[in-house]
Length: 187
Image (cartoon, rainbow, N blue to C red; front, top):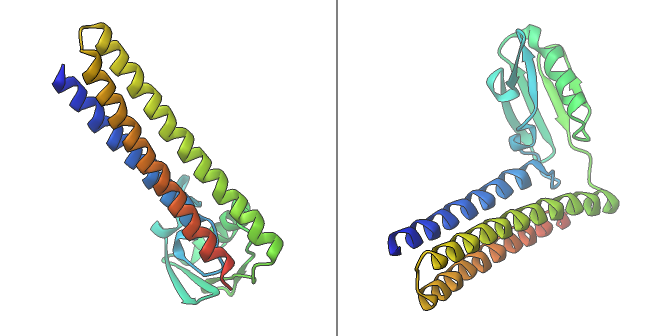
């Protein structure tokens, strides 16, 4: 029984860590006024019939705080990359000069900052829901073990441990959101 409890707690920790990692990835995709190659993550280009990430068909560099340069390894990929960026609707119009594509990030308006922060908050809320779902599942497993003969005291201690892990991860989500808000609100 103790071994099963430890497995449950390890699983809770691992699953909640994955939820935090996912949040970090999603927050990097949200533009905060500074150019970042991560903004293009998740955008795929049609590369000879198969969807391929832009980073696999082009060199992506940050020229300055407001400019990203995309230089495809094959010149015929320029139009496909440009089309994919337009379809991704990231709020930036690509500038194609025949050799490379440049993305000039417009300055964020107050309204756009609030909209982006709302999007970040939604991602944070999704992470919190995922963490709470993991907690609920773990609590159900502990109750099931209790029905199978686990003592009530050990079960209560395990439930407290699960709650402590949950609280720790919820605080992490809030910290990530606060850092993203600070990044977005600084000009």
